[in-house]
Image 1 (cartoon, rainbow, N blue to C red):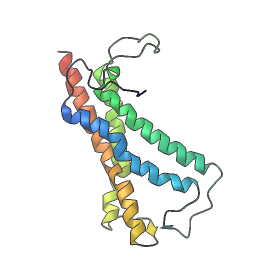
Image 2 (image 1 turned 120 degrees about the vertical axis):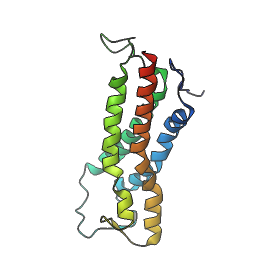
Image 3 (image 1 turned 180 degrees about the vertical axis):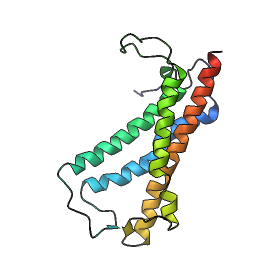
Image 4 (image 1 turned 90 degrees about the horizontal axis):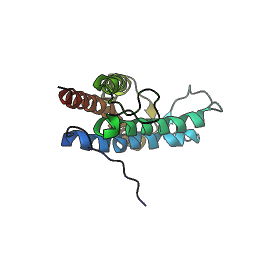
Length: 175
């Protein structure tokens, strides 16, 4: 039995590009999450850092939890292209069944997108040597790291684009 999440079942039609971006986002960020997981088991993925302290006891749970949280936030972005992102769910006291104000969803999404741009936006500068980067044992490890972590640079701009499209679509619906 397949679980389906209704997307595009909104009051006003979702632009095709926004629907595709929202569906693709969890897969865009997935390589970054998978790259992170071996670190939880103490495997350093070819990194060289002589000053790295020993991993604390809580680090494996943190690394796994961070990857799960990352994917959950990417899936939450689907609310910007789905009907369930336009109406408060039944379990929310006092608001159940009411329309979500456009800024109540687009505002936090835009702030989150800006934070993500701040977190990952300098990564390309590290690739060209402007900002310091973690050292790797050889070029193969470096290439694998960039292939896996590079797409995360797109996470913030994608969320910003989806938040803007959501706000425009929902604001036009209220007129």
